[in-house]
Length: 119
Image (cartoon, rainbow, N blue to C red; front, side, top):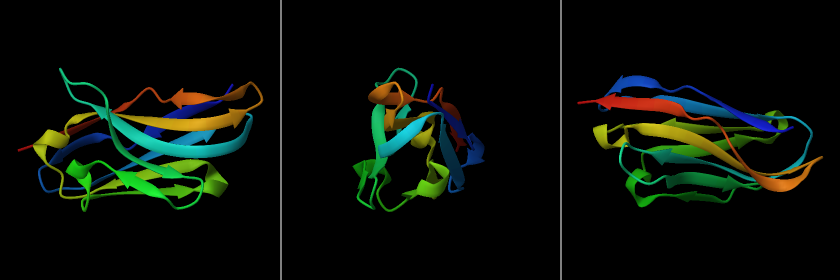
């Protein structure tokens, strides 16, 4: 069964940078889109950025100009480069992918990785 595994979270000071990675594995035929969501304590999960099978990207207004999403199709991996981090970026970041697999087409989620930005 397909799964998504995130890495790269951690503690960083405001103004710093982190790079998140998410690798998709399993019997994957096609990846339509991959992206990142985040959920801060007491708040709803929100889209951070996503990227289609080509190079079309979409960003939340709050991260435009600071975060960059990219994708390595050969490795089935999506990255999120986060710069100029702010305390309000603190959240659990979840990888999301729309996958076509041996079991069918569906929406998959990783378990999340915690990003903490200290002031």
